[in-house]
Image (cartoon, rainbow, N blue to C red; front, side, top):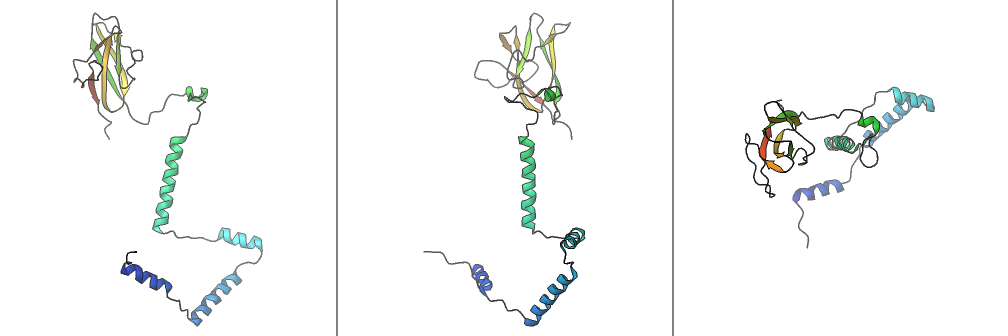
Length: 198
């Protein structure tokens, strides 16, 4: 059982099926205009090509077609930007000419200084979500007053971090808020890095 069609749909169907009546005089005027246009155009191929290239041409797009074309061009631009792998060798390593260039950052990072007071420590490393919690990636330097410091650029947002003292002891930053437990028994701290002012 099918549902009855909407009255507007029925009206559109009736109008589409209605025969079109053309006035004989109107048809003759249109055909005369077509013949006159054909007579004005040059008949040889080079002349037709030259005429086509030098005449002002116009075309019209419906808003729907224009929107679809614009969306398609934006999509192509996004795909081209995200899938371009110029200068990358097999295995994901940059080729020599790309590796020698400094990395380009499209976002503005904020330089953040971390300080740990540990005059009796022999080594301190900074670990966090910004360096994959790797104790070897961000070693800190001892200053004359016994504090350990390191400065590094961080992206805007919330970052979790901790200090690893003498390679084994994890310590939170007493100058920063404590993060919720990580499930591994390590204490970590929170650093909120503000975004760039626009």
